Every structure is written in structure tokens, then in C-alpha cells.
Length: 433
Ligand SMILES: Cc1ncc(COP(=O)(O)O)c(C=O)c1O
Image (cartoon, helix red, strand yellow):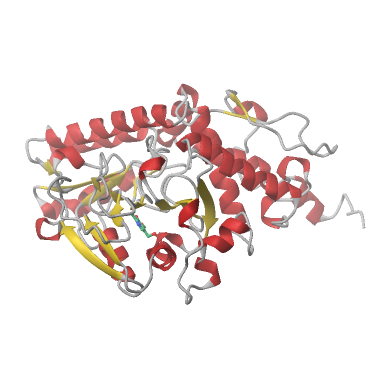
């Protein structure tokens, strides 16, 4: 039935941006990158592919610093769910109501329809391009967060009596180990706990078990700010290295062939919470323990192209937009350069503060994603967080287990956000030093 053009509902539906003070207009998008359009041609849909700009293009850097200029956006330093590229959010907003002329939001689509198939296949293909993932690996879009993978990995790769080596460089590696205890025989071959998780071990000194099924690391410890800059050579017979890359996924190029399996929750660098990405060598699939729930069995998901059951469709769509954006910025080589610049700026500010600010992590393994630091006068930390929030810099409080301050500066954090934080830190020191 046609809707009356005079009903209040129709007015609401006609203006999906009515709640926005400054609704996005076509011309408000800096034009940079053409996105492939889905081949639907219907009269109500956009006639041309919509264009978006790179997150770090000068135009968008300017837009991001609109956080200074009275816009409702803030600089969000949260560890996850975390900041997303502003242009990706705008793009999603523009497609929310009617995805590319389909007459539906992505949230309303059948996951088995051609539109969503296009979305998930494009997301996978763009991720493969970004990380140069060969056809020897399956790429799975799953649910349950990285925490579910703490169980799924041993369930899929081990028998209950198999040994596994764990290098534990922070709380997340520790949690992964504790979960694995239920499904195999893991052993911590190195732990940084006694040094408050501030280090990565020397790889030469690692005593690995040749009978271990795999060696597990957490590539970036989100709470402690410890990041592997290189990866240990697995010395187990199968030569298998497994990594939790939740908090540095797609922040730099990674040689996927060094890994049997990589897993990552999306909500730090590549999308909203609700999507977990698993990249697993295909020959490792198909040996799940009998007790493995169907939802944790990689073979089920690989055989069904991540569509065995209803996947987190909207989250996968958002990840796809982020992947497009990362490619448009020049791929992960360019992304890494930007991350190095931001990281150096922030760590320099800490190191040059004459002890007013301190980062406990050994310099060679400091994370480019999560920067933890303390104040010499710890009683000022609360004030620091409070004053920063007044300046529209949010979520700077350190994790409740370690205290202090933590600035998460994922891919989507513009340079302007780090510049503003550094300026604030200097000013705060001048006032309280
Ligand atoms: C490195 C790392 N691994 C695992 C997790 C757990 O992820 P999730 O909450 O998605 O299960 C997190 C969450 O912050 C994380 O940072």
C-alpha cells in the first residue's frame, strides 16, 4: 500500500537525517575514492557510486579536528569499541536507510540475498588484498569476540592431550592460556608477569616444546601496551604460530604466511564489536574435537563462507567499509607510516617530560596502538582524565587492572587527535609540574 505523503510517518521517513543539526550533504564529502557500486539499478537508488575520502586525507584531518571547533564529535581514545574513521561513519549513515538503491538497510537484508553476498565477498576480497592473504588461507567472519577464539583455537587445532606453548606478554595472553587449559595441555613457556608485563622475550632464549601443537602469542597487549615488532619462529614440529591480533589488526603489513592462524575482534581497528575475524590455513581445518559446538567449528564456517547461520551482517558491512578506506589510503604500508608518526609523537612527549609522565614499557616493544602511561604524581591522574574530557578527549583512563592513563591511537585516530593530546599534556604539566 502506498504511504500517504501527508502522514507524519512519511515525513519522518522522507528525512532520515532530521535528527542531525548538520545533516551530511553530497558536497560535504571530500571526493577522493570511487567505491565499486553494487550492480543494482533502481530508480530510487543513487545513480552514481558514492565517493568517500581517505581517513587521513588532509580534508578529513581538517574535518576530524572539527572536534576543536564546536562539532559534536570528540577524540575518542578508547581501547575498544573504539574510534572509527569519520568518513566511514558518514558513508554508513548515507547508506543506512537505503543501501545502494536496494530499498533496504543492510540490517534488514537476508544474509543469503545477493546484496549481502556482495557485501561479505567484497569485504573478504579487500581484506585479502590488504594483508596479501593467499588462497591457502580461509578468512572467516565470526561472532563471540576474541574471547570465544580462546576456546575455538584449541578446540579446532588440538586433541585434549596435545601440548601448546604460550608466550604471555599481558592479560589477554594470560586469559587465552587459562581458557585453553580446558581443551588441551597448554604450557606457559615465558611470562612477563613478574615484570608487570612490560617486555617481549628474546626469541632465541625461548625453550619451545617440539611436541607442542602450536605456539600462541598475543601480538599486541591492549591493556599493557606491549607489541611484538617481529614474531618468534615456532619450533614445534608443525611449525605453527597462532596470534591474537585483536588490537593491532590491519595497523601494519603482516606476513600472514608466518602464521597458521590469526584471530582478531573487529572493534579496535576494523569495525564495530560483534565481528571476529579468523584467518586460518586451510589444511588446519577439519580436525575439531568432537565436543566442539557447531558455532566454533572452523570447517562449518569455511564450508559455508561464514554464512552457516545468520552472521553479524551490519558489522561485516562496516568492516568492509573500513577495508575499502584502508585500501584507499594506500594499504597497510601507508597506514603503518601514519601510525609510526602518531606513536612517536606521543611517546616523545612522554619521554621528554622529565619524568612527569612515564611509560613503563620497554622502548623496543612499545605498542603503536595502545599507549599506557602514568603521572609521577599519581594523585593528578584523575584530574588529567577529567580535564582532558572537558577538552573533548575521552576514554583516557587506564584499564581498571593497571590504572594510570591509556591513550589508544588506532588507525582511525587522526594525527590531529594526537597533536591535541600532546599539547594538552604539555599544558597540564606546565600547570601542575
Ligand atoms: C588483545 C585482545 N584479545 C582479546 C580481547 C577480547 O576480545 P572480546 O571482548 O572481543 O572477546 C581483547 C579485548 O579488548 C583484546 O584487546
